[in-house]
Length: 64
Length: 349
Image 1 (tube, chains in turn red, purple):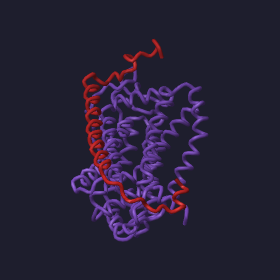
Image 2 (cartoon, rainbow over the protein chains, first blue to last red):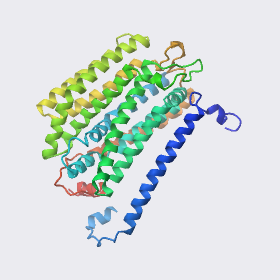
Image 3 (cartoon, rainbow over the protein chains, first blue to last red):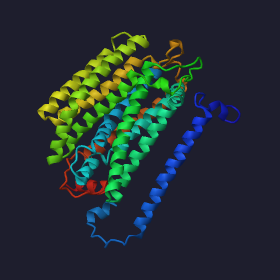
Image 4 (cartoon, rainbow over the protein chains, first blue to last red):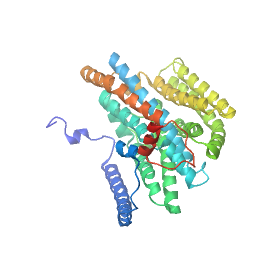
């Protein structure tokens, strides 16, 4: 809320700036690493040839 | 006042549901490196929890959200005080979630092994850290007169809290093994049965010791008498011992029901031992957070109660339905399929 609950007042009092930095860096690098792996996976799947079209049973088609 | 107690009970209920349900999928995850003989069986093990594990995880979100809305002071002190513990839990949750999705994307041995260990390590790690965190609520952490966490990381580790974490790991591994004996067929099912009989003695011994220790901690630091915390503790010990007997008799369904009752009663023992406090302060007991000093305004609790009364039964219903749909046993001979295919097969037949 404007001027009522300031970010500085909402900070965890027991968590130091150093720990905030460490945890932020930790999550940024974790998500970056996972993002790189995901990109490589998607590129590998995107380069695959399409499988021949499957015969869908009518029942399954309806459920989609 | 009464609504505060109701929300305390509701939060205890959410935690119980979380450990009852996610407890067995943690157990299945922890057993991934040990029980299956090959990648095919490992895939079957993952499919026993495939349709349900992320629904189980939502119970944690609900427990956290309910704490945030009903007891903001508790939420604030717990989540900032246990900062590093929660960082670890998030890390384990993230790698575990990814392992479910990515494992089957490649057949390489190293790739499969990385995600198997990510799932097993994540499952064991989350159980361990939650045990330590919940043990700390009762055993007490240093709180200042603002009821903010005034300790450091080392304050969170003591014999009792680390033992709580190990107990969670062992009990969930046993719970997961008895779940596997219910949901698999053939050789895998027999080996799951063997795993559950191997785990039964350490799990029951650790569980019983932890429960007795919990009651004595409640008496020592939380100004409780032995009764009522001894009640859920006794139920938990009785359930775990019967689960042990049933596991040896090969009655997998009843053994699973007993590990389920045991898990819920362990959580109940912790929360009964806590009440009326939600987070004990040690030293300076007078700074403890209680059900009344940590709660939201009556109006907030009233609005939340109405919403919870409407939505919670709906969520319980559809979750029960999803368990009903995926109740069948699965084995290596069955063709793998997406949950949608499985659902289509179930509804046709």
